[in-house]
Amino acid sequence: MAHKTFISYKYSESRWLRDDIIDALGDDATYYKGENVDSKDMTDDKEATIKAALADMMYDTSVTIVILSPNMKDSDWIEWEVQYCLKNITRKDRTSQRNGLVGVIKKVDGDYSWLKYETENGGVNYHTEKLPKIINKNRHNSNPEIKDSNGLWDWLNGSYIAFVEEDEFLRNPQRYIDNAYDKSENDADGYDLTITV
Image 1 (cartoon, rainbow, N blue to C red):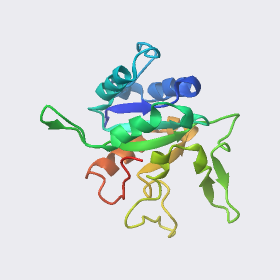
Image 2: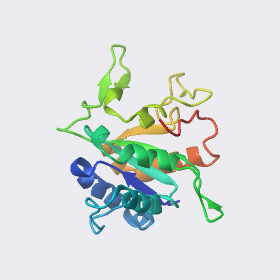
Image 3: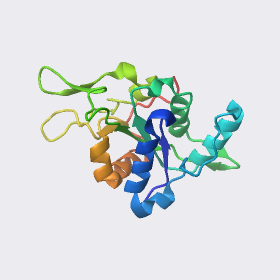
Image 4: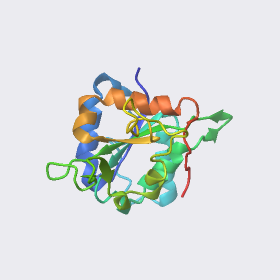
Protein backbone atom coordinates (compact mmCIF):
# COMPACT_ATOMS: atom_id res chain seq x y z
CA MET A 1 0.00 0.00 0.00
CA ALA A 2 1.34 3.46 -0.87
CA HIS A 3 1.83 6.07 1.85
CA LYS A 4 2.20 9.83 1.61
CA THR A 5 5.88 10.53 2.11
CA PHE A 6 8.20 13.44 2.81
CA ILE A 7 12.00 13.42 2.37
CA SER A 8 14.16 15.35 4.83
CA TYR A 9 17.68 15.96 3.51
CA LYS A 10 20.56 18.43 3.23
CA TYR A 11 19.96 19.97 -0.18
CA SER A 12 23.59 20.70 -1.08
CA GLU A 13 24.75 17.11 -0.66
CA SER A 14 21.69 14.90 -1.11
CA ARG A 15 19.35 16.35 -3.73
CA TRP A 16 20.48 13.71 -6.27
CA LEU A 17 19.69 10.93 -3.83
CA ARG A 18 16.31 12.56 -3.18
CA ASP A 19 15.63 12.37 -6.92
CA ASP A 20 16.78 8.72 -7.03
CA ILE A 21 14.41 7.89 -4.16
CA ILE A 22 11.49 9.58 -5.93
CA ASP A 23 12.34 7.60 -9.09
CA ALA A 24 12.56 4.35 -7.09
CA LEU A 25 9.06 4.96 -5.72
CA GLY A 26 7.73 4.43 -9.25
CA ASP A 27 3.94 4.93 -9.42
CA ASP A 28 3.91 5.60 -5.66
CA ALA A 29 5.85 8.83 -6.30
CA THR A 30 2.44 10.47 -6.80
CA TYR A 31 2.11 10.23 -2.99
CA TYR A 32 5.37 12.15 -2.43
CA LYS A 33 4.63 15.53 -0.80
CA GLY A 34 8.05 17.16 -0.47
CA GLU A 35 10.35 19.28 -2.58
CA ASN A 36 11.31 18.19 -6.06
CA VAL A 37 13.14 19.63 -9.06
CA ASP A 38 10.17 21.88 -9.82
CA SER A 39 9.87 23.34 -6.31
CA LYS A 40 10.27 27.06 -5.70
CA ASP A 41 13.67 28.05 -4.33
CA MET A 42 13.06 29.24 -0.76
CA THR A 43 16.70 30.07 0.05
CA ASP A 44 16.04 33.79 0.51
CA ASP A 45 12.67 33.43 2.26
CA LYS A 46 12.23 34.27 5.93
CA GLU A 47 12.42 31.42 8.45
CA ALA A 48 8.71 31.65 9.30
CA THR A 49 7.78 31.43 5.60
CA ILE A 50 10.01 28.38 5.09
CA LYS A 51 8.64 26.65 8.20
CA ALA A 52 5.07 27.26 7.07
CA ALA A 53 5.79 25.85 3.59
CA LEU A 54 7.53 22.78 5.03
CA ALA A 55 4.74 22.22 7.55
CA ASP A 56 2.19 22.34 4.72
CA MET A 57 4.15 19.65 2.88
CA MET A 58 4.59 17.42 5.94
CA TYR A 59 1.20 17.80 7.64
CA ASP A 60 -0.74 15.05 5.88
CA THR A 61 2.16 12.67 5.25
CA SER A 62 2.55 9.41 7.14
CA VAL A 63 6.20 8.49 6.50
CA THR A 64 9.33 10.63 6.54
CA ILE A 65 12.47 9.43 4.79
CA VAL A 66 15.56 11.08 6.30
CA ILE A 67 18.67 11.02 4.11
CA LEU A 68 21.63 10.53 6.44
CA SER A 69 24.61 12.39 4.95
CA PRO A 70 28.02 13.50 6.30
CA ASN A 71 27.12 17.17 6.87
CA MET A 72 23.47 16.83 7.76
CA LYS A 73 24.07 18.35 11.20
CA ASP A 74 24.84 21.62 9.39
CA SER A 75 21.31 21.72 7.98
CA ASP A 76 19.03 24.43 9.33
CA TRP A 77 15.99 22.23 8.81
CA ILE A 78 16.49 18.47 9.26
CA GLU A 79 16.21 18.38 13.05
CA TRP A 80 13.14 20.66 12.97
CA GLU A 81 11.51 18.54 10.22
CA VAL A 82 12.07 15.30 12.15
CA GLN A 83 10.67 16.84 15.34
CA TYR A 84 7.62 18.11 13.44
CA CYS A 85 6.98 14.67 11.93
CA LEU A 86 7.18 13.00 15.35
CA LYS A 87 4.35 15.16 16.72
CA ASN A 88 0.61 14.83 16.38
CA ILE A 89 -0.32 18.22 14.88
CA THR A 90 -3.83 19.67 15.08
CA ARG A 91 -5.14 22.06 12.43
CA LYS A 92 -8.78 23.14 12.21
CA ASP A 93 -10.11 20.32 14.41
CA ARG A 94 -8.14 17.68 12.48
CA THR A 95 -5.11 15.98 14.05
CA SER A 96 -2.41 14.40 11.94
CA GLN A 97 -0.85 11.14 13.06
CA ARG A 98 2.84 11.07 13.93
CA ASN A 99 4.95 9.86 11.00
CA GLY A 100 6.93 6.69 10.76
CA LEU A 101 10.58 7.43 9.96
CA VAL A 102 13.34 5.64 8.10
CA GLY A 103 16.94 6.80 7.75
CA VAL A 104 18.59 6.18 4.38
CA ILE A 105 22.39 6.15 4.67
CA LYS A 106 23.95 7.98 1.74
CA LYS A 107 26.80 6.20 -0.02
CA VAL A 108 29.94 8.36 -0.05
CA ASP A 109 33.02 7.44 -2.11
CA GLY A 110 31.56 4.01 -2.80
CA ASP A 111 30.72 2.92 0.74
CA TYR A 112 29.02 3.81 4.01
CA SER A 113 32.07 4.02 6.29
CA TRP A 114 31.52 7.72 6.97
CA LEU A 115 28.70 6.55 9.27
CA LYS A 116 28.83 2.76 9.62
CA TYR A 117 31.65 0.63 11.01
CA GLU A 118 32.20 -2.93 12.14
CA THR A 119 32.82 -3.63 15.83
CA GLU A 120 35.46 -6.02 17.17
CA ASN A 121 32.88 -8.77 17.64
CA GLY A 122 31.64 -8.47 14.04
CA GLY A 123 28.61 -6.30 14.79
CA VAL A 124 27.72 -2.97 13.23
CA ASN A 125 27.86 0.41 14.91
CA TYR A 126 27.49 4.04 13.84
CA HIS A 127 29.40 7.30 14.24
CA THR A 128 26.42 8.84 16.03
CA GLU A 129 28.24 12.13 16.59
CA LYS A 130 27.60 12.85 12.90
CA LEU A 131 23.83 12.72 13.36
CA PRO A 132 21.32 15.20 14.79
CA LYS A 133 20.33 14.51 18.40
CA ILE A 134 16.68 13.86 17.54
CA ILE A 135 17.72 10.93 15.34
CA ASN A 136 20.09 9.43 17.92
CA LYS A 137 17.44 9.74 20.64
CA ASN A 138 15.01 7.61 18.59
CA ARG A 139 17.38 4.70 18.00
CA HIS A 140 17.47 1.52 20.09
CA ASN A 141 14.29 2.68 21.76
CA SER A 142 11.87 -0.23 21.46
CA ASN A 143 10.25 -1.05 24.79
CA PRO A 144 10.49 -3.91 25.44
CA GLU A 145 13.63 -4.46 23.38
CA ILE A 146 12.90 -6.24 20.10
CA LYS A 147 15.23 -9.10 19.19
CA ASP A 148 15.53 -11.17 16.05
CA SER A 149 15.23 -14.97 15.81
CA ASN A 150 18.90 -15.30 16.90
CA GLY A 151 18.30 -13.32 20.08
CA LEU A 152 20.17 -10.30 18.74
CA TRP A 153 18.89 -6.73 18.62
CA ASP A 154 16.50 -6.39 15.65
CA TRP A 155 18.08 -3.70 13.44
CA LEU A 156 14.84 -2.99 11.54
CA ASN A 157 12.30 -3.02 14.36
CA GLY A 158 14.38 -2.24 17.44
CA SER A 159 14.53 1.47 16.62
CA TYR A 160 11.74 3.85 15.71
CA ILE A 161 14.12 5.22 13.07
CA ALA A 162 15.75 2.25 11.32
CA PHE A 163 18.87 2.87 9.21
CA VAL A 164 19.03 1.39 5.70
CA GLU A 165 21.87 1.72 3.21
CA GLU A 166 21.05 3.70 0.07
CA ASP A 167 21.50 0.72 -2.29
CA GLU A 168 19.23 -1.52 -0.24
CA PHE A 169 16.57 1.17 0.15
CA LEU A 170 16.51 1.94 -3.58
CA ARG A 171 16.08 -1.79 -4.38
CA ASN A 172 12.96 -2.07 -2.24
CA PRO A 173 11.73 1.29 -0.89
CA GLN A 174 8.23 -0.01 -0.19
CA ARG A 175 9.54 -2.53 2.36
CA TYR A 176 11.13 0.18 4.46
CA ILE A 177 8.35 2.72 4.00
CA ASP A 178 5.79 0.09 5.08
CA ASN A 179 7.94 -0.82 8.09
CA ALA A 180 8.16 2.83 9.17
CA TYR A 181 4.42 3.28 8.67
CA ASP A 182 3.61 0.15 10.69
CA LYS A 183 5.61 1.50 13.64
CA SER A 184 3.55 4.69 13.62
CA GLU A 185 0.18 2.97 13.21
CA ASN A 186 -0.55 2.61 16.92
CA ASP A 187 0.84 6.05 17.76
CA ALA A 188 4.28 4.46 18.18
CA ASP A 189 3.26 2.21 21.09
CA GLY A 190 6.26 0.04 21.97
CA TYR A 191 8.82 2.83 21.48
CA ASP A 192 10.17 5.34 23.98
CA LEU A 193 10.02 8.34 21.67
CA THR A 194 11.87 11.60 22.06
CA ILE A 195 9.83 14.33 20.36
CA THR A 196 12.03 17.37 20.99
CA VAL A 197 15.66 17.92 22.00
